[in-house]
Length: 230
Image (cartoon, rainbow, N blue to C red; front, side, top):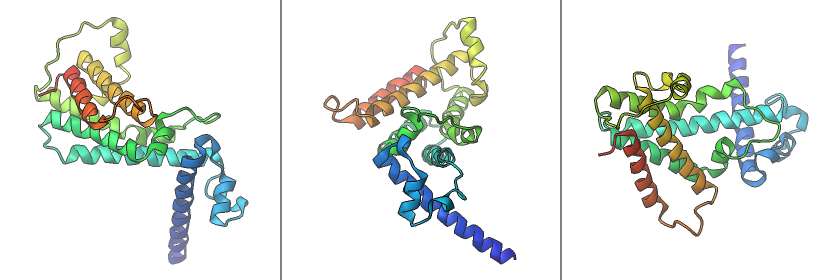
């Protein structure tokens, strides 16, 4: 019975992977809003009722794709950070930034699923949160490590009570970091994703040609905002 169950689990895992692979290809041609379980079933040669044993609804399939994409992006950023000397904070920052950009440019349709227009009628469940935080956690650790090492020297910012209150929701991501540095980190992180959004969604077309060079310059400016530039 154990061997039989293991075989069934292996077959189920393989079919689940095939379904999500086909669904990712659909993202490229139909967009997230056009994702269809019936169309996936047709491509697999499976009766439409059978696919619901794996994904009860389109939203369940979307959730699986979103979690896979967040995990892939998070893993890329984690790998980029891991290969850097952990006390070289400017290098860690630039490596993480390049990892985000490189993954997004290589997987534009999956990136659009995460950071593009919301899918009508879909609301991401709690299941997506752990995967969604992986790349952010790398940045938080970087800032915490740099602060503890005395490597961050930004000018002190005077914060309003409202900003101090808002910081409560994200302090856990950057333990030990004062609120003024925390907000500079948020500013730099949003600058990174703002650039990547512009590039992936074509806002730099016919405007900026050597995007990698300009990207590196912009990310160094962002690092200077935090206070970790060389």
